Length: 139
Image (cartoon, rainbow, N blue to C red):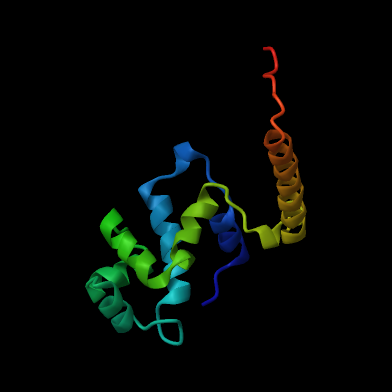
């Protein structure tokens, strides 16, 4: 499936909350479902309908972008296809995959932070174990 770059970029861009409409959700979900469902994809339409329990005709409308699922059916899509379906809504709200933004903390940074916090907790435990009285800072 070839999606024009401008369209693909628009579908990855965050949307102000006031502009998140059923039509926007429908367009983004349709974009993602076309990558997942269809000949040569993760599941054929028939397989996806069987796995989700959603009528094939209804599912075809979701893929085509002419209908939008209710919360229950969206939940079925999530259970079968996992976060790959939900990523469109996350992107819409401004979430960004860590791997695509080098400015976000990477795994090594998070390990260092975890180690520093663990060291601080050990120091606090040591102070408390020796019966030291800890005073509260004045506001």
